[in-house]
Structures are given as C-alpha cells and as structure tokens.
Length: 204
Image (cartoon, one colour):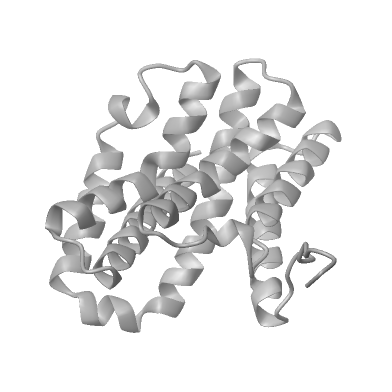
C-alpha cells in the first residue's frame, strides 16, 4: 500500500505538469497555469469524493497532494524546455498515474459499500475527470472522447480487479496486476493506433 501511495503522489505531480503544459500552450498567466495544474491533478478525486459523500475530500485531509502539485508546477515553470523534451517519460508516468488513480478510486468506493459497477465508474472518474476539466477549461475536446483508448483502459482494468478479487487474489498482487493491465492496454493502443469506433451521422 505504501508503494500505491507514493505512485499516487507521483501521478498527481505528473497530472499537474500536464495541466501546466497545456496552460502554457494556451499562453495563460502563472495563476491560470497553476489553476489548470490543480484541477487536472485533483479534479477526478474531488468529483469522486463528492459523489460518494466523502468529506472533507482527500486532498484537503492529506497535504502530500498539495506538495505534489506545487512540485510539478515549479518543475514545469523552471525547466519547461527540459520537461517538454521528456514527453515520452511523462506519458509513461501519466499512464501509471491513471492506473493508480483507477485503483484508488475503485477501492475507496468498495470500502464504503458502493456496488461494484458504480465502484468501477468511480475508479474511472478518479483517473480521467481531471483531464476532462483541463481540456474543457482550455477549450479543447477532452481526450477521452476521441483518438485514444484512455477511459476504456481504466474500465477494463477495474473489471479485472473485481475478477481477481472475486477469485481470492491477494490485495497487493491484485493491485499490481491491475496496474499492469491498464498500462499494457494503454501502451498497445498507442503502439498500434487502436481507438474506439467513431460515431458519425449517416450524411457524413
């Protein structure tokens, strides 16, 4: 569990960096960049907690999240050119981040007695809603709605988690397997340019 917590903090920092880079691309000021970084990093977890009725929300109770966001913001502000060149590394950490966020959201929902299907949705919400808020505020079509298999990787991983839990897999093993499945689906979708079918009007 301690590994999951540290991966959670790293994922939070990487999500914050993603938000700040997006804000920089839109030429927002420092406050705007920090704000976008914050909502990208903790937006999903905040919405999850509010939907589940868990208050205060997680990032208010644990200062590690704020420190992770500020670290990501400072790194991006001071070393932006280097960070941009590290996009592949950031992509890997982002992928690890959504995997870890999915598990955290799923487990949090299950631990308070939510039914498994809703818990899967809460896992996905934790992982992707921050990015949706980021893209919406910066006038971009959210990533989960086009191009890449992103949210579906989280849903698939969460369903595997439930299956492994049902057959009695130890918790730590289950978490590692789920992380591996989500990362594998995400990487394979990028490697082979896989995507969900596109819905089109019959006139198009």
